Image (cartoon, rainbow, N blue to C red):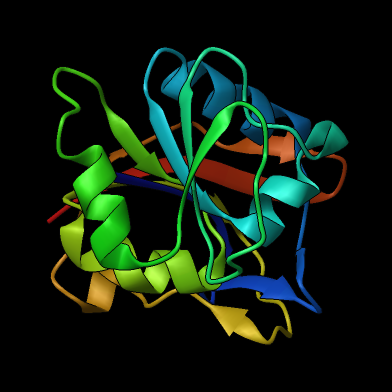
Length: 160
């Protein structure tokens, strides 16, 4: 299983239920990377997508505790166990965990590869991803420096 996240230098990923930064090239990279695969996200992450709709060209799974939640074009699971049952039949497709914070926390132990858009700045935040570099992950790839206005970032790949 893979993880995809945009994180600040201090591993901050959000504040006030919003992403810290939105970089169009990161969005395009996510779309390219996950096309034809499986994406897993929480309800709030799904609702933050354009028109609050699942990503086209992928199998979408939403992990939420809200029993009344349903969305066309996605499979909804209400627990980690239910999600695992629904994913059990998937073979030959890459699976990407795409957020939010509680979904990352629950599924990070199942991931062996992490794609991180690392913003070279620290932010005050209320949501953080665990520091992969301090928890047994090794950076195996790093892109050239990228910029978006005054934001410098890198695409990094980590493996456990």
